[in-house]
Image (cartoon, rainbow, N blue to C red):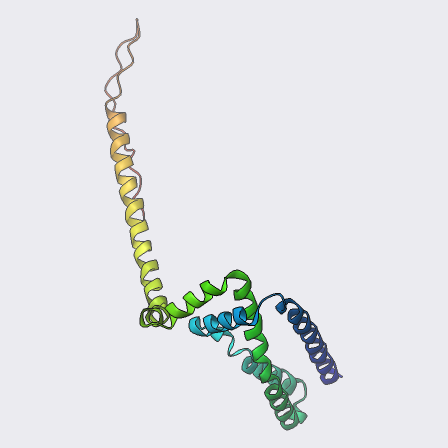
Length: 194
């Protein structure tokens, strides 16, 4: 019973995906083919959809494990069926590319997309794509060090100023009152930032 339920659920998901693809095709009509071509070129240049390359293999593996766990006696049938169906669905990877192209075409003009493609296919653009994540990590480290230094120096400077103000406050002068004895200096230095 569980196996049949899983198959029905997968079929429902596929039907919903087909509906979304049809609706998306209707939206694609408002954007020219040359604009979409520029969007596809930009997507390729910036590797916009590469992060999704493992979706089908991961879904395949997860479904196989789940079905085998529920139906260990059908392991060979499950493996061959899931692989066959996954292979048939692999052509749908193009659907994601179309959706990505539509998203980029809606956000950028054709000229902007062509400029993006030109930059990211140039040597500096390729280098930015390959070393950008490393530089971003280094920037985060530098910003953390800078932040701690600014917080520490702010605390020290504020502490010095408050100490000076507290230590040089004028003594109250009242008519009949005796002058107050000098009080010990008050420590207003904040704890150093960590």
